[in-house]
Image 1 (tube, rainbow, N blue to C red):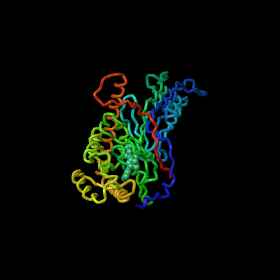
Image 2 (spheres, rainbow, N blue to C red; image 1 turned 30 degrees about the horizontal axis):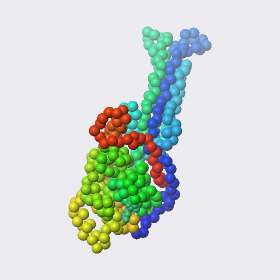
Image 3 (cartoon, helix red, strand yellow; image 1 turned 90 degrees about the vertical axis):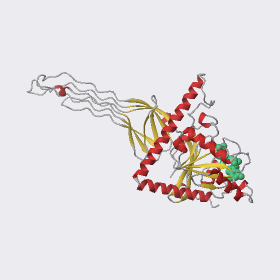
Image 4 (spheres, protein in one colour; image 1 turned 30 degrees about the vertical axis):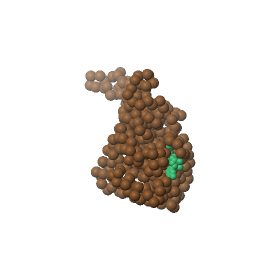
Length: 416
Ligand SMILES: Nc1nc2c(ncn2[C@@H]2O[C@H](COP(=O)(O)OP(=O)(O)OP(=O)(O)O)[C@@H](O)[C@H]2O)c(=O)[nH]1
Ligand SMILES: [Mg+2]
């Protein structure tokens, strides 16, 4: 097969540490105090009140920046504070407002309140803004309290404190296509066949320990991002193997590719294998399991050439799959080009649908939100199970002692 070539924009690659989670504290500025002051002017012995209001405290605002693809900086500096508002002054001068603190985050960053674990929001497009801590209001100067009965009020108020929150920032890899399958199904081999990504490939399970991204570039402006995540095994939803926590990276994809090893070298029945993965996806997030998922029957080079046609036809009949089914060999490249172009066309079709039909766009957004929510809940549940297990409390779920969601991910990122 002719390997899809990388176009200019994607020709430059680099590998870097990719952090997909960060805990930060954000503190908005306090409002400035109101001022107590009276006019003191020549020839006016008893001037009225002229204390101005305090200025607003600065807010902490997140802004999406498409040039960023990591939250790593937030690991090094976890605390952020916006300026306080200045106090009011005489001559009815309002105090200067505190400057807002604007923090750049990658597009796709989701923000949670870390204490309550509630979703605050997400920045989805370049330059999207989200206020995460509101600055305090300025206090009132004594001018405000002037009335017909009190011409010389000495009352003022303090500004209100700025909001302070502990936030958990999460970044999902933004890929259009996500790969799922058992360990050894050939996911990494396929991504290396289709893109410039060079993931580790080996003949043992769990070669891939962290998600990897590759860009499949067919022509200028015709490219998509494909995500390779660690393999799933039976019981993954309960934490077996590497568990399902990496699946959250697939909750932003449009199409899932489900790779199935059809070589039968390990004596696994492909139909059962497909069911295993479907079950695990369903337990993790029913709406992720219901996503458009193409079956990719892989390692077809290992099937005897004479029996191949009959074998594949029988297998397709047995699977009775509702979406597309492709037959490939990630190693020889057979069928890979057709798969890549079909994915591209389908992604373009879906994009046009979303652009032209507001209902389709709304439905897709709702679906993405639902997947993100289910994933978040399931991961929180698993975290809780692990916490209980560490405390020695007996829980029904499968043992899962990998314990650490906090690792760094190694991915290949794209620089223009
Ligand atoms: N003959 C043949 N071997 C393949 C094919 N695709 C993958 N393999 C082999 O299968 C083994 C596993 O491939 P990987 O790409 O590492 O599989 P994976 O799904 O990424 O596995 P994990 O990362 O462990 O989940 C390697 O030895 C590959 O060389 C194929 O199409 N034909
Ligand atoms: Mg792999």
